Amino acid sequence: MRIATFSIGGERRVGIVDTVAGEVKPFDLPVDAAREGVLAIIDRPGVPATLSPIPLDRVEIEAPIPRPRRNIFCVGKNYHEHAHEFAKSGFDSSAAAGAVPKEPIIFSKVPETVIANRAKVKIDPAVSSAIDYEVELAVIIGKAGRGIAKEQALDHVWGYTIVNDVTARDLQGRYSQWLVGKSQDTFCPMGPWAVSKDEIDITNTAIRCFVNGDLRQNSNTGLLIFDVPTLIATISAGLTLMPGDIIATGTPAGVGIGFNPPRYLRAGDVVRCEVDGIGVLENQFEERAA
Ligand code: MG
Image 1 (cartoon, rainbow, N blue to C red):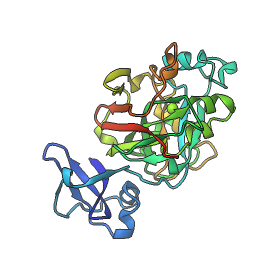
Image 2 (tube, helix red, strand yellow):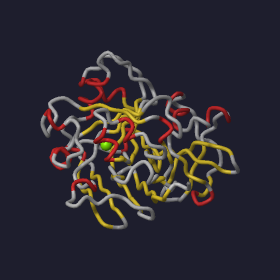
Image 3 (tube, rainbow, N blue to C red):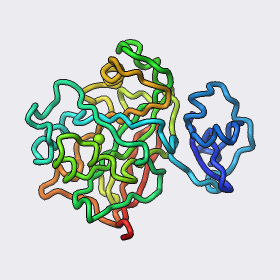
């Protein structure tokens, strides 16, 4: 199932997307529950989608989880080629430990960074002049757990979505912790919707990113250094993962910092993130009004 959070007539709803028919069939949810987006469905397995289908072009797609309940877990340097391109960029405060990490690098983005497909990412030139893109497969947790073994890890997964882990490289490099450079307002485009875990084989799924139509990142989730079960086992060791938690699994090579000179994003640029089996997440960047 592809499940979208959307609004129509000023009201937020959640529904099953039928891309062939071009419609979305809303779940029968209380208004308050629907405000949580896909979280409402994770919390209510089996809730029926019985309302009349609505043409997709009549609704405004929102981020599948418009406001996560807590920070988004993220993984740094989790594809080999990207680990090398970032380590030699001069902005990698973790490079002293080696280009390829021996254990997953876990950081987070604050929940307020999340924006929808086609919403604008804001560049603030007073704060950063080195804005970069990172397409990533994001895992959505469905079942709580602490000390989850790798063998059981996928039982705790509800599904997947796409995020663009937008990054201010200059801020990321300035501080040994990455949170500020990763948590600027609007720096987590997410969507276009979420898919249940049966929709894709995460051990072999193509992942791509285009900037203004130019293919920059082109890889496969099978090339993750630390796979999804390893990430879940690592994070949940002593930290209880909760339903609705999101883990952005890392980005492949081809980010702007990997070029010489670097190719940072500018106002007007359009970044298109694709993960096969999920969809397309596209956002334009614009300068923040003073
Ligand atoms: Mg990232």
